[in-house]
Image (cartoon, rainbow, N blue to C red; front, side):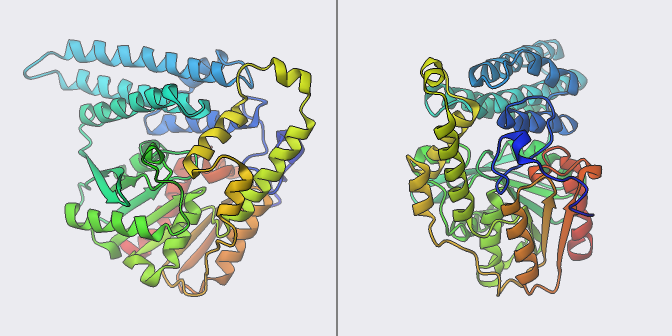
Length: 418
C-alpha cells in the first residue's frame, strides 16, 4: 500500500511533522485529545465504550480542556459501574443468573475503559493514582464476571514488581501473544486494543507493564534502555508459572514499545522468542525525545504570556508530558534527551522472524526508522506492512482500527507458529 494515499499535513494538527501520530481530524481540534478519543472509540469493538457512549462523553468535553476530559470520562465510568452493580444484584446469590453476570461484566469492562481514558490527561499525583487504581479494580472484576480465565502475575525486578495478566488458550498447544504498550499505556488497556482479539483467535495472551509503564514508575522503576533485561525476567516467570514455550511466543510492542521489542530482537538469540512485531519500529529513542523537546520549546515561545497567566489548568499536552516525565524519571525534556543520548539498537544480528507495521499518518521519524530497520535486519523471515487511509488503520499504532493490526499479525504468524 502506498504512502502517498494519505499525505501528512503537520500544520493542520499542530504537531511536529517528524514525530506526529495522526494528521486527520476526527473529533477534537486538540491533537492529543483527538488521538486518545480515537483510541477510546476503537476499543468499543473489543469491549470498551460503544460509539454512542464515546460520543456522548465527547459532547461533555471542552476541546483542549484537560479537566473536562477527566471529569467526563470518570462520570461515565461511574454510570457504567452502577449499571454493572445493578445487574449483578439482580443475578442473585448462590447459583446466579449467568446472563446477568455477563451483563455486569460487560458494563464493568466499559467502566474500566472510561476510567482508563479519564487518567490520560491528569498530572501525576493523588487524583491520577486514585483513578488508575479504580480502573484496575474494575478490570479485575470484569475479567472474573466475564469468566475469561485471567490470572494476575507479578515479576520481581530490580527491587520492584512488574504486574501483568495471563490468559490461557482454549486450544491445546496454541502459541502465546506477549503484548507491551508504549509511553501512554498500561497493560490492562492492551487487552482492549489487542489482547481480547488474540484470545478470541485461540492464542494464549500475556500482558505486562515494563519499567515506566502503568504505575510501575511509583516504585522508582522508569523507562530504561536495556529492556531485554526486564523482558527476560518476564519470560522466565511466564515459563515457570504458566508453562509457555518461548519458541511459540510472539512479542508485540507498540509505540515506545516498538523500541522495547526491537531491543529484545537484537539481544542474543532474541531471548529465544519465536517472532517479534513492532508498530512502528523505534531504534533510536533519542531522536523522538529530541524532536519532542524542540517542538515543545517552539510552542512555549509562541505562547501568549497574558493568556498563559489566565490558564488555571494544564493543557492536555502539558498534562500528558508531565505524566511521561514521571514515567521516564526526569524533570525536563532536555534531561530526557541527555539520559537517552547515544542509545540505539543494532539490527545486524537480528535473525528472529520480524514484522514491522507502519501507519501512513505516522510522522517522518517513525517512517524513517521503521524502513531503515526493515532493510537492515538480516532475518530470513521479515516483512514490512504499510497501512494507508483506505485500511482505516493508518494512525499511530493502528489506534483507529486495532482489529486490522491483529489480522496482519495473525496472518504473519500463521506460517511461523500455527
